[in-house]
Length: 421
Image 1 (cartoon, rainbow, N blue to C red):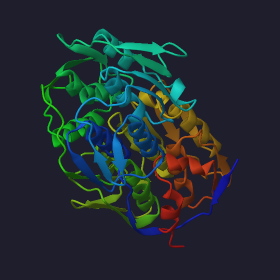
Image 2: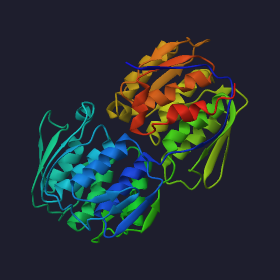
Image 3: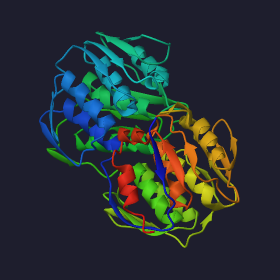
């Protein structure tokens, strides 16, 4: 297994041009494929998750070129396909919903970890509308077979929102294919900012969803229309690592491509930085973080920014006292069980960690252990957030560093360019 050793850094400063947002990129690709007309996509993320989406769309008969998608104007023309979607939840969940309404026969599979990530809440909702979906392995999990069916949406479609907001987003994006309808959320809806991204992008493609709080969503009877051209924002989740580096090691560090008007919820990671004592500045197109080299401990509910919450967990190693991250049960069903993985790797560094069902309490050691080998569990965010240990002046080894290719193949090179000494 490949291992990357990161030498200790005492100061970082500079700027980073962010890659395109994964959450926006895969949503835009799908909506452009379903729309009437040609869509030019600027700053599309080039990484594993977008690659599997593009391959799937091409396999479904959609013409996708570099930065361009010629829409199918509704349901996909190819009615029988076998699609491999890696470990990309932003591809697997929405395509499941869309293909259930396309009147074809499809097999959807993924990487081994994708087959451990639940999809039952989405399948249950689609079956309630008449979709025919079979589990090819364990009940409630991929892989799936989707068969032709007559879907009727005469009454509101219920979906549970406690495991993943992607299930709701998938239904919202798919329902224009069935002439619209109503989706009602049962129980808690987590990660609401990601649903906001979905609603914002559907609006850009001509479909205005009317919602009543976070419980009911009405999709009108209309079709997607290409906006002609669309710009993908820089990835706010990836921005969190560089902004955290500026807070840990002085900075200033500026991220370009995302700013105060971002549609991405992870820009609210800036609130965590400020709570910890960092200085944050921003414009419409950039965010900058710096500090005096000390950080306060925190106790925060980070349900709204689960990806960036991992960055906060590593920052807690450099805080003055114990920190607690709450309401992140969704970590259990991500690319790995992130609650267990974070607790294990933080303990390797000498931290005292209390792992609850939906929280972590992290007490930093007086001195971090040096040259620890961090296991990444084939999870890109594990690799990226634990790289910050080196920014705090402690050498660290990252096992399987190439897992960052899922969303940010050039991450380690971009981080290295910020090191000043």
